[in-house]
Length: 265
Image (cartoon, rainbow, N blue to C red; front, side, top):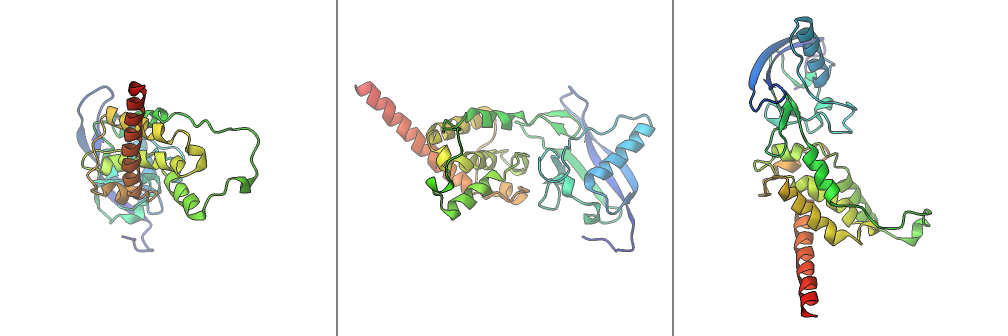
């Protein structure tokens, strides 16, 4: 809720997950952050808190951030039980004016079975990178730029592919899913290529490899809770999950038929 324009600062209590690097468990620690400028972002509030901890000789809270412009998805925090916080945006775009004075805020890492905690609020999300790597490369010719009208693409398909490509790989969908599924992330990465001509040669092998890599990484199965869609800062639709499942079944059947033909000959 927006604050009164006459109010310049806000004081909040934060309950932060602290876990030393290399340890398997951690605990919540409470801090008071007084007189934070109301125009500050959530991460700036954590910066202010860390400055006070350093001045006291205490270990600052470890958390990740990079662009702080809602682009990279590095700032993965669970705020009051919601990935990235109460607004459907990345944590770095969350503003302190969204909180009430004297609010008690709980901050946790994106911790799931596939996202082990490294330290405090930092988790290892390299499992998402390995899912992408499993998809391999496209073999389409990358030489001179073709004449634009030589490969016509319908406007609706182009927009659909762009919507899928908006995924920033932050992992909010995984953190929001009760099963810890990465289906929304994986389906978006699959279909921004599957919808375009450039992605057709490897379409079947790509979906098989990426879905199987997702399972191998220990992500849970999708049960259509749609929590992933609700928490995605880029608004990726769960329609891509249905398409991924359909493509995976087709690719599996084609692969089975191909192997059967080889044995028959």
